[in-house]
Image (cartoon, rainbow, N blue to C red):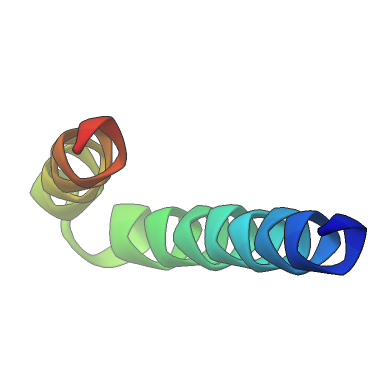
Length: 47
């Protein structure tokens, strides 16, 4: 059980880090993409 929780927590932190990098990269190219990625992540995370 603890291993599963740790795995999920690690995966979640990796996803957060990947989204942060994606937002930083998208901001320099297109300011609209970060907002869409945040909205998509909120919708996906709420399900």
